Image 1: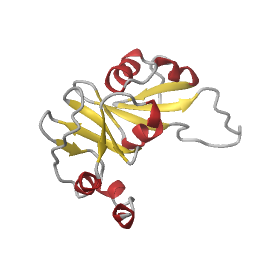
Image 2 (image 1 turned 120 degrees about the vertical axis):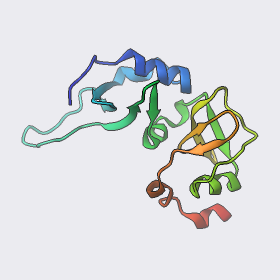
Image 3 (image 1 turned 120 degrees about the horizontal axis):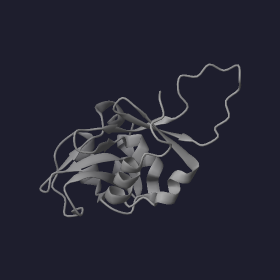
Image 4 (image 1 turned 60 degrees about the horizontal axis):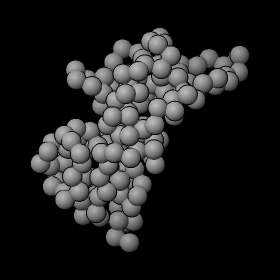
Length: 153
């Protein structure tokens, strides 16, 4: 992976504009760009000299033609740092998201685009708000990780 600027301002601006993430967060992290992916790693991360590593960070987003598509794990990592474009799902809405169905929600974000999906105040992943309905961006594999029996409680 090659570093493209220590902290690419366009990704930082996206996070601030779309999700309200404070720019100060990035002082402890490096943003690494490789092809169309954006990775986050801790600044000064110590790795034993005899270890062979492929990467030390995690994939935060994918570059699209217009902006960035945030990853589910990235939004979960941001957690309470997300202050904008967040949708709190009801149990029935969350079940629909996990079944990969479009839903219409009364909790409308500020603008069309990617949103952080919350269930019981916990970030569960990424969605896309079209202006009329919400589409999940949570993969089938990740959606299977959520225990269904806990939804009924």
